[in-house]
Length: 112
Length: 116
Image (cartoon, rainbow over all chains, first blue to last red; front, side, top):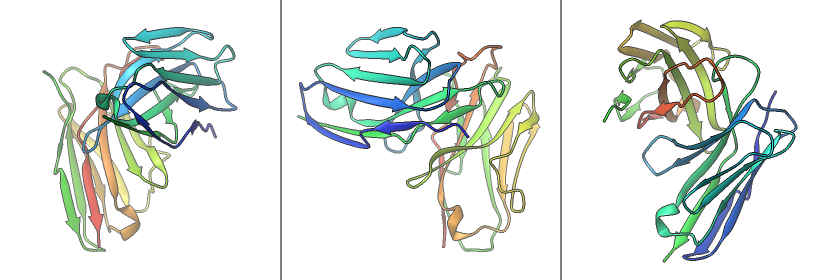
């Protein structure tokens, strides 16, 4: 069974601070996606990384896929209250089209 | 702005009752997924359809849960009989089914189910 552990589980910071969320597994994934979910809504895709060592930037968010494609990180620079939400990583394995395994989630609260 | 729609948004029912949740995938998408989200277990895949055919329902309790796609515009998830442990938010997602691992799943707003 493929498992994705995220850390930390909860993070409460002040506006303007930087933070990093980690997503770790003992399994290799073909791709790794990051989603953000806001209360009362479904998850929304932020990014997909495919190549080991790949780094993608989305404004103040930087995503990295580990060289061995077993782990990933999300770094937010100068967090804003609008970044508040549940961040989920999700890995696609080798079991077929788009069968995603979701991580345990990191709940982020950014206070003004 | 194409979106996945789900009905009902909220459902409160008593143990033993039948519950049916509906999902309308984005027009043109050929993959549909049902997920369940709880605080304890997180987001779990229940069932997965491609071109209306069930490809994987290994995450679904077979004795009480069933998932179908009567047509390309409707997916249903049924629980009969419902139990308190089924209380969760149920999400439907759809995708284009691209032949690689980079496809995007678009999630609906979810159905919050409470079984008393």
